[in-house]
Length: 38
Image 1 (cartoon, rainbow, N blue to C red):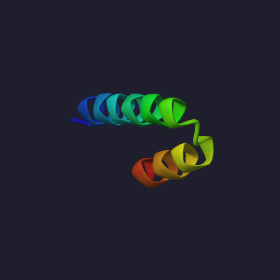
Image 2 (image 1 turned 120 degrees about the horizontal axis):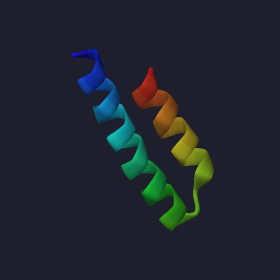
Image 3 (image 1 turned 60 degrees about the vertical axis):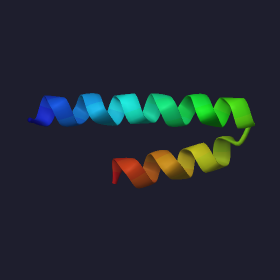
Image 4 (image 1 turned 90 degrees about the vertical axis):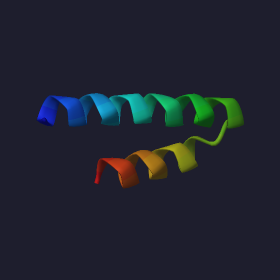
């Protein structure tokens, strides 16, 4: 269960990171990652 959760978080973070790089908004990226990680 926990491993699946970590995989989901990693996949989500990768998606957010790709979107942040495309938009060039790293501050928003950091906020989204912190929000999802929390």
